[in-house]
Amino acid sequence: MTDVDSADGTLGECPNCGARIPESAVLIEYEDGDGRSAYADCPECSDVVKPE
Image 1 (tube, one colour):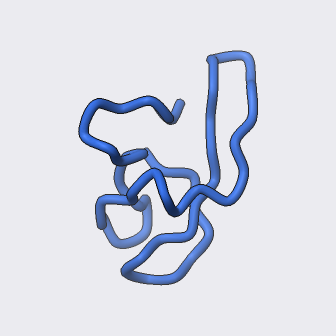
Image 2 (cartoon, rainbow, N blue to C red; image 1 turned 120 degrees about the horizontal axis):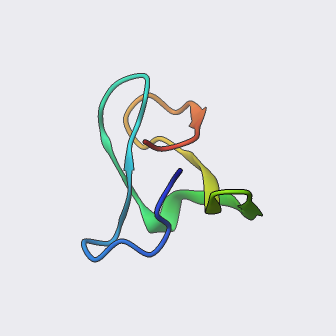
């Protein structure tokens, strides 16, 4: 699950390259069974990912 309300202004890390993904990179945010999740554009590798 992605914590889209993190205290440091990031969504988490890119599962592909490990870069920190800022909240400003969100493409879509949604509710799922575990809470709120998001997909974002990684600023380092430019992939659309679900931050971890």
